[in-house]
Amino acid sequence: MSSHSFAHPKTISEIRSLYHNEKVSVPDFAELTASNIEKQDSRLGAFLNFDRKSLISRAQEIEKQRSNLEKYPLFGIPIAVKDNISTAGIKTTCGSKMLENYVPVYDASVIKRLVDMGALIVGKTNLDEFGMGSSTENSAFFPTKNPWDTERVPGGSSGGSAAAVAAGMVPVALGSDTGGSIRQPAAFTGILGLKCTYGLISRFGLVAYASSLDQIGPLARSAEDIALILDAIAFKDAKDSTSAADPNSELYSKSIGKSISGLKAGLPREFLAEGISPAVKELVLKAAEKFEKLGVKVEETSIPSVKYSLAAYYIIATAEASSNLARFDGIRYGHRAEGKDILELYSSTRAEGFGREVARRILLGTFVLSSGYYDAYYLKAMKVRKLLNDEIVKSFNKYDFLITPTTPDTAFKFGEKTANPLEMYLTDICTIAVNLAGIPAISVPCGLINGLPVGVQLLASRFGERTLISVSDAYLRDTKFNEMVPPFMKEEH
Image 1 (spheres, helix red, strand yellow):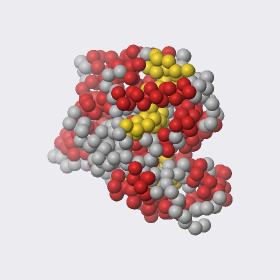
Image 2 (cartoon, rainbow, N blue to C red):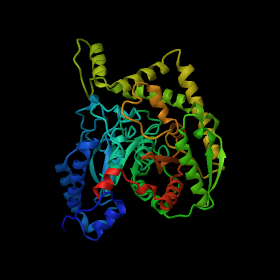
Image 3 (cartoon, one colour):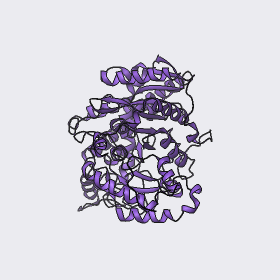
Image 4 (tube, one colour):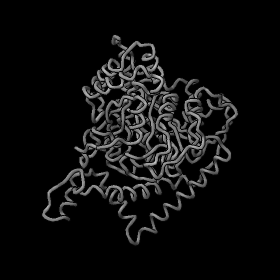
């Protein structure tokens, strides 16, 4: 099999057909992928760990299974992985000095599933340290740049994964989403990003930030690719006590190409209120009109407690982070500082190992859990979470899905929001309610403002991923917004 020069980006089904028709071998395609990554990544900084040699040797192992193509649904498909998901023998740093040299001895459950299905794990992508941030500026190593405009952030915390897909380095990538960390970078880079129902995808091997909110999920260029990855990684895992079985056993990819005529959608007014840029609002309303043309009945609705979600989220998430990150003490694993006694060892290790944003969130979380403040903050936030959850569940008695913006504005410039943490936190205003309620949501590209991508966010009830896939697929078949590529990619072809 000879190595052809195939134009990027490719979807999973396009790559599959190349393999099926014996146009290319997995090592050949891996060589092509590696060259593309080396060319683009020097400019964008999407990968923290990429090694051509080990990629080719993994590709050679996969090629040996060619006679069993049908047995491996993801045979030779290159997948990038956010660097807070454990990969045996490959460094998993979480974008932190604390874990700069940490090499896990085991694979996360999702990685094992992907590898068992023949996927080619390409490398590990950059992120805000421990997933804490909305711009990938909080990585301890270097920031990732937005392929649409390298002076702007790609979003966060899954900024590396989003940039890798948007720049055509890989067809799909895994990210994780605690308060919007898959959907917001997807919106900023013009691709799709799915945050699943809490429990649908195993968190075993995901380095925890806020365990009741974190979810692993895919980023891709098409609804079909999102569905195919979900077919592979959604399962009930005995290794994760929060793992939940989907009551519907039908493959997610069966939702592709379905008519969405007759569905009902709600447009919650709280998501289009103060803080949302008028240009973003306009594109989201245009998306709602497009759904109406596709036969969906759209009407305005209300989820009043959404206005409290930002405050509740930053109390619950930081409280959980303060507990989860207590393990990084310089004794068990990770960075270790010198100290004349145990107390100095602890404090020096944590001062050296954690960046400012992580330290800020640990301190905030420790404060809201401390004696005298627990009831005033944490308990109240948990009550708001319950209220929000009840309101959202109730809205799905009436609607099949909800339509909102993914982000209040387009990608911002580096340094624009770093001086004011609150302003940075407000970039998550449209996404966090989804994590608090544990429901699925997808960001889908819906146009450009001044040459920068915008995402529309679609929400469904628990285990409503199939609805989100068929609705996204129908919308994109009609609009072709997922075919938009960054300007540099047009120049290259």
